[in-house]
Image (cartoon, helix red, strand yellow):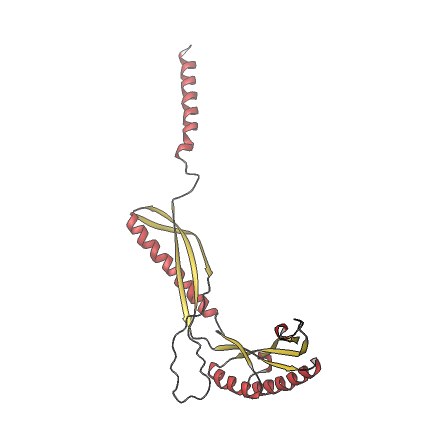
Length: 239
């Protein structure tokens, strides 16, 4: 082989080896990253009470039970609105008419019979001043309500509470990232991605002082907490 042809062949082989070796130095996965998560929460005293109450009436006929129930329920609604509760905050949540049966164990033939009818009418009342909850319950029971099915609490403007919980979760994730980076001997680079979501929790109740001589039923709203989670992905590099 002539020297010129040998030189060209050597250069071509070297170029091919170099081209094959290039991918070994590339990092298709991108820069190394550090993924951290954080949790945060914010709490506040609720300012709205949601009460579920009702009137249950029984009579020999369905018509008589409905009439008796309507009379008592109208008195209950008038009492509620008479305390300043807006009508938009009072809603019927259930109306049921059902037969009442006798005890088959007390029948010689072991059979049960319809002895009357029961009407249940349920209301959901949103009270935007928790301080009025106890006195209101006493008044509606005196007016004819004979069932209080439960009470829950809400925060009227909870957007600020959610925002505070998310900020706290992100701050906690950043704090953890700084600790981990320092311990690992790396430095944090640009944020590659960040996500946060609300993870609302159940109300956390705290004791509230009540006056000894308070005649109304005590209603304590406690403290309601909203939690959030955040995840941040940082690019990292050697210090």
